[in-house]
Amino acid sequence: MTGPYGDIIAAENGVPFTAPISELQTSGLPEHPSVSEETLQSSASTMVSQWERVRISKNISHLGDRIEKLRKRLAARLQACKAAVTSEELTPELELLESTRMFESVLTGTTASSTEFAKVPHVRIDGDEVLPRTVVLAERYLAIADGIWSPGSFTIYVDAAQKIEPLLLSEVLLLPASLKLAQLEFLLDRADEAFAAGPLPPIESSPFSAPIHSLRRLNQFEWQTILEPLVAFNHILADDPVHAFSRMEEENRAFYRLRVAQLAQYADRNELETAQAALDLARSAESQSISDPRLKQRRMHIGYYLFEEGFPALAQRIGYHPPLGEQLRSALLKQNEDIYILSILILSILIIVAFIAPLVPRNAFGLVIGALLFALLPATQGASDLVNNIVSALLQPRALPKLDFSKGIPEEQSTFVGLLE
Image (tube, rainbow, N blue to C red; front, top):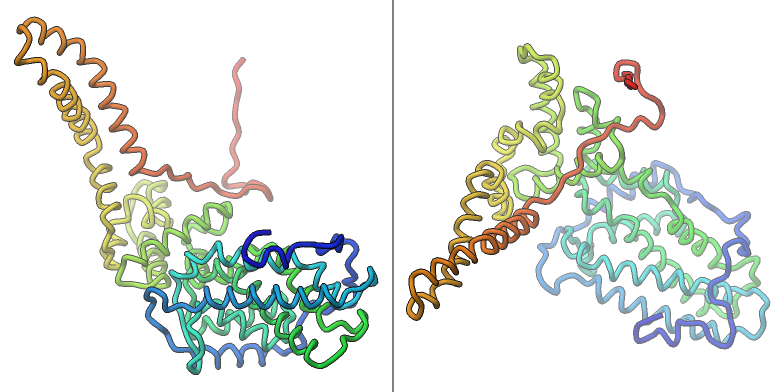
């Protein structure tokens, strides 16, 4: 355990602060909030109508301060629990101590994601702290759900919020970390209230069991099952006229979504509009008279406009302004042979000149020519290696899209392979 409060948070005196999950009593603990769908939707709509977008600038976000305060509160609360534990009998205090490492991992994970949090939209509600929009959403959700999360209720809440103001792809990917942070803060708030009220009840009536169980389920949940449908433009990509997107492997679908987000970042359209523009272009290919059916099928796929030859049409439609790095990569791809050969030639000449020039004033012509011939091979080899390294750094490899046939191969895509002996 690291950090200024590591000596307080770490295990001492032989008390096992992280109990094996199999030993924890979870039967009977709630796993679904007792709140109706209508209440969740109403709360989400109210939240979006209240938050005020804040322009991101240096030091404006209060997330770092929030994490540091939580770290101090956690250390102080665990110190008080440690002082109250007098035996190995399970009590609410010991229950908190046993989950120490899980609590600390939440703070560590959020701190590690601070760069990503700093890039997403920030909001404030009623003059509160300026926080990432996902953190505010997670806090309000757990408040209405009384600290008990479930995939279904969370999906309802986020969907209701996105009907008014869609989240960015980067925000959706930060939802798990935001929920864990909000769950830890909810738990500490309940702990402060319980300790202030007097002696804690027996473990059977512990006010911490349900929130701790909720946080543990957050850590164990397979998030991809609900994050993909929560991406605001995912359903647009899924409407691909050739139905290829929905049959791709998850890694490739994630790559397509990331491409849309990257394009929208430098375009005059948002992520939803960028995805819709790609879909409109793919649909327009259906009405085109193309004699080659394979070419028509290719042009009816959204990937043709996101990555391949159809990209210029999409870039024009969304008002894309490529960054300098992409402009360099595009120039390399368009004039690849000329740039490659010319770069090696120029670098070879510069290397040879740098090697031969000091020899010219002091040596005979024949000796200079011999040195030039001797330097020719290593100079061209060095120039070739340097150009190859530069090109490899500028042009990152891209995985080819793959369809997911793990559940069987459709009849129209089946084939056979013959082997000749």
